[in-house]
Amino acid sequence: MKALLRGRPAAWVAAFVVVAMTGFSPETAQAQRVAKYGADFLSGGVGARALGMGGANVALSQNVNSGYWNPAGLSHLAYPEFAYMHAERFAGIVTFDYAGAAFPINANSTLGVSFYRSGVNDIKNTLNAWDVERDQPKARPETYFESFSAADMAFFVSYARMFSQRFALGVTGKIIRRTIGDFADAWGYSFDVGLQYRTRRFLFGVNIQDASTMLQSWSINESAFAINDVNPETGQNYTFQEVFEQELPTGQTFLVLPVARLGSGVILPAGLGNTFTLGFDLDLAFDGQQANAFNAGDISFHPRLGGEFNLKNVVSLRAGVNRITNSDRYGLDFVPSVGAGLRLKQIAVDYGFGDFGGLSSDLGYSHRISLQFSLEQPGLKRQDPEQP
Image (cartoon, rainbow, N blue to C red; front, side):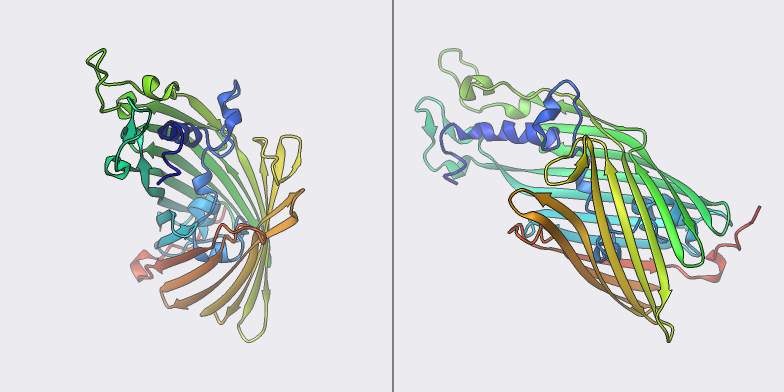
């Protein structure tokens, strides 16, 4: 509490709004207005199976979660599928929920929808805990605290079409909604384009996220920054600028540039009906993320690697590396992940453990639990794909 009210502290609320708007990147306030982390709440991925394998899933994804990883993968569904995942990060401070559904609509086409929410709750608003006349915190300042939440939400609509047994294409339309309490909100729109190609054992995939470049337009609610105390000289409530000598943030439009996600994988027999799957992905980002990332100019490279041993399509064990970074302080740093899964007829339960934040970080761990259900009813099975 004291940390919140040290100096002229309540202005941190405005600073929080500015940082959240710009995607944690001061450079976005400059002319280019490119948000390096404008949709970062989606970067963690979905599905505990994929995340247990380090997120190396662009080529391997062939289920309802493909709406996120690669919409072309939806074309492999034989029946309608449903999925849900809950995850917590940074000791439960950030919560993440995902739900998805996908339906084969004819022999070659599949439609999918998915919803995502990431939020931080119980953020303290200290604007009215400051005694303007005495220029210090009010007595019992905690009684003046209010709370708000910052939430990021996304709604995806995906379509996939299989053109042959080896080749499929898909597209995802995305609507993004971001809110910072009553202080600010934004809308964003874009789409992803993906393809998958497979041979007998090898798989390849490409997913261009935000292929159209996402526009995020922020608006500010100035009334949310109002101060409840009355200025005796004017008879009006103090303004934010009068109390904290800081200008209010302004609404702006930021760009989220495309990310090219390249994936490959191989599925190998391991005897007695068992299989071993290995995946490798490489993301190419074009927004100048140079800190701790492998890069060539404004292009940064983000590799992911994962493997899975599947025992008779019932029990699975997984491990992977979902981030590799390099810094002067720590050198080469890995963010590992592990997981396990159990499949019983139409239901799959998966668990993933990871997001160590790097071997030298104390940011805590992330637990992911996901459920997947396949509605395997005779009347709902996809017809055999039509081949040209």
